[in-house]
Length: 189
Image (cartoon, rainbow, N blue to C red; front, side, top):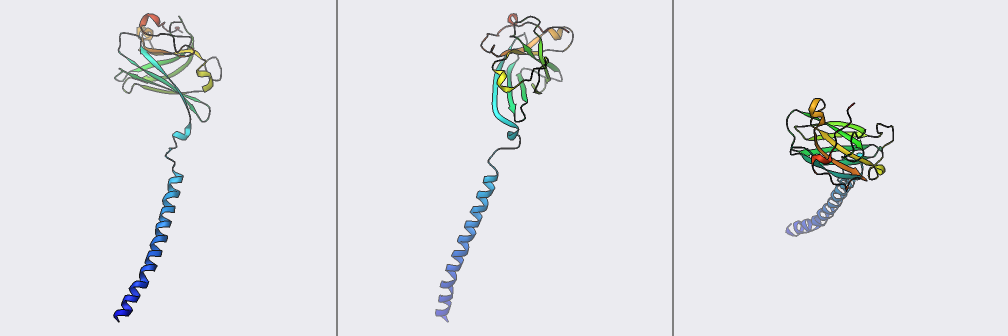
């Protein structure tokens, strides 16, 4: 009986090893297929082409605010314009404008009224596909655009004439924009 028991155990081990090898192979294939399905990108990443341009926004008033504006191309062709400012606070909405011309152009026409920036978060996000003059706005146009971005203290009264932060974009990106003297207020309508 001892010999049979030994023979049985010895014969059983190769079967167990084969089953374990197949199990390991199947498990590895399952993991590999799951990883292949998830390449690390999320659905949100699929909304963008991967092309973006970032421009600085500088303090342009007595209020210590600065940040940036990011232009991201979406897969449908629209441009997402995101403005982020440091130094804002509270439940105050700050108007944000995309302008034709650089920051020091007096009464510069508004190319697009971007969504207001909330002081508490310091952010604004807007989808743009067409400018106020009905020009289709594409990502390839941004670097050649003669424009600027201004964030105002408020939308009415004296606050309308205070530009908290601003920056030149496109062909104007290298024009110095530090200090309130260099920044013209927006055209009143």
